[in-house]
Image (cartoon, rainbow, N blue to C red; front, side, top):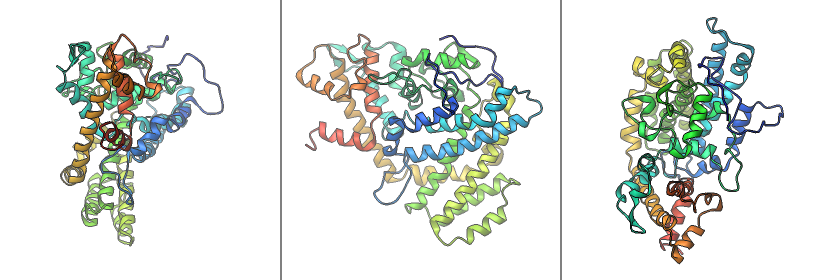
Length: 462
């Protein structure tokens, strides 16, 4: 696939091209609008409805799951895209061509909202606990013998780092672009622009370095190495260390900001809804945030008066939540435009919300209360521990059976339980690709399915 590699600017940092060679049929929608539709109708996206966001999914009280979180992030992302697109067009110092004007006026919002929809699509069941369980399995079982060979010796150095540092961000690129057995080639067929918007960490696991924001984690597995390179070079990413490590694309900052805004604010609303935090605590935190942002567009006195006039506790907190999100969107757009030259050059080493926090301290107390009273709450910790054991045990069942060359009857039965779409490489000579197919199956499971399967395969429930 031959792609243009011109130096990035606001006229060249987007393209309607995808990884697929074929030209999509025209039906009135832009390719960027099609990205949104393809993600939202995909089975991987639908499965997010039964993946934990923070709190265990209760029976009657509504709290957010990964799907509702992603939809709300997409809504905030759409607003960010629309506002930034407008300001780029109105900026006299930026000389945009006709194609760019059309893109920023109509399609940037679709790209950002699509990236937001997909930002968690690679997360396994039980969230970060699921990621840690997969990573830990390989770390603690490195000497486990399969066919007389330690597990570690089945993989190359770079592949082993992928497995021992399993990363949901990298898995998102895999989910969106992989050709699974019986599925369409090039995955969902998304544009390079939408794929670029989710590459928060445009480097491999070997280049991961927590002292740099854009390399704090990593963005692709070795199995998607060339796909990543096509995206980066096709859009003119600024090279960092080598041809497989780059600085971020500008649109990443908007997707990241939308996610940061939502989880900082909405987790507080959920905590109030289930009775974990009082109305007084949450309302004081939200009002303090609005005051510290000190925006002309958000009148604190008017917000307070309206809040006091709402009788329903949940509705009054929802009102403040909406005002906080609106204020943070305005502040994020301002931060993006103030730093747009450095962002475009790949020289902006912070995040939009981080810069807002550095200047105002608006989120300090929210983050403190969230950590101490939400993320370390007993119910949250219990689901982390349970999820860790479920994911670890499933890997201990599936992986040895797939890696063994001479399979027992039980091994063959276990392999037969893996859905057909994940059988593409199960007979490959490349053990890494075999392993990735196992991880495709396990990481794609919902919380409920993983728990149910664990109980069945362990003989707890027959």
